Length: 63
Image 1 (cartoon, rainbow, N blue to C red):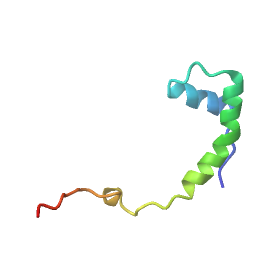
Image 2: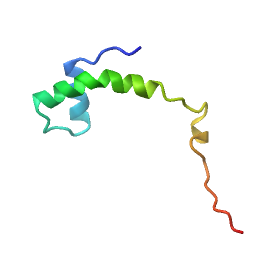
Image 3: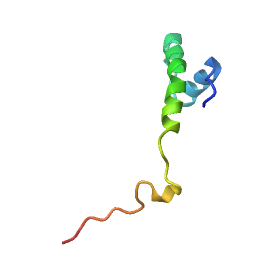
Image 4: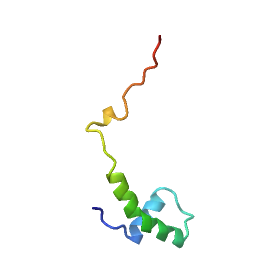
């Protein structure tokens, strides 16, 4: 389970990624959906090692 985002955290997140033109309504909507986005991303299975994801080398068949 995730901890709910605060309005201050959302404002800091938006500023960190250059989202400086967002209205207060947009920031509020962002805060509303942030928890669902965090839960969805936490449910995505991850590979045990980062160098296995998705593949370290892609080779095209030559023949």
